[in-house]
Image 1 (cartoon, rainbow, N blue to C red):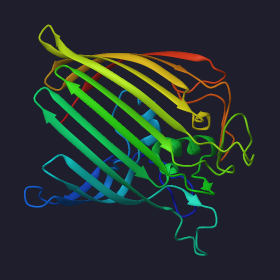
Image 2 (cartoon, rainbow, N blue to C red; image 1 turned 180 degrees about the vertical axis):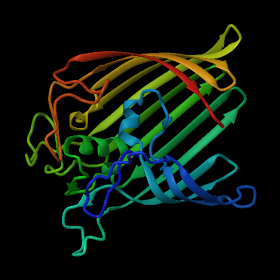
Image 3 (cartoon, rainbow, N blue to C red; image 1 turned 120 degrees about the horizontal axis):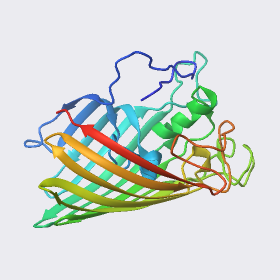
Length: 308
């Protein structure tokens, strides 16, 4: 996380401090009991993504959430698993705080139900996730920080769902994801279609879907993968998510723990602006959202070294 909520709801930047994306303890032994407990900073199970991706997919932007959470999970030998979790979000709900301002964070919670199976050369995984407040999402939080320098109050939580399905067959892989708000926002929190905050009838209900696929092979004896991805969003201009993304990548493993990846993707923006709690500028983040239906093509060359 790049920021944290304080008692006053402002943002405290982590400057010259050691930071951890994950620092948790797990209690459980799946060989003896299907139930386990995990507590600490962790990626809560909402959405399917690589938290250290070179370029986050649009579905990842709407789902990734790194929280200090308490999670209770269970796994069965037949491939069915699930988890429920609780966390404190980064938002303050208007009228929620007590007189001494100690209950400044919303009580967040979520759940996942999943199934996975491997049969010879075929693999399959599916999961359905729920979170009770998508405003606690990392990316949406950064948009609020970027525009106002603080974690804004909100008038109403926005619950959301995520559905994921992926298949693998020999050297091929194919996956689909859909992330959507379970209901419309409060018009004072988020609007779309060039509306101003508070405009009844322009409440946003952001959603993103996407498909990706790849083929794995060897390049001069080195493991490689060629992949393609397509994402599309709706009513997401306020949170600087492009309307569409089309891209591809080529990755080759040149050492035991070293990858080289070349990536190209094209983002196309909305022909509208949106507002999220505070006035949002038309341009998005670097290499991200664009406005007025314009497009931006990005080229990325990455050298990655893994430590384990």
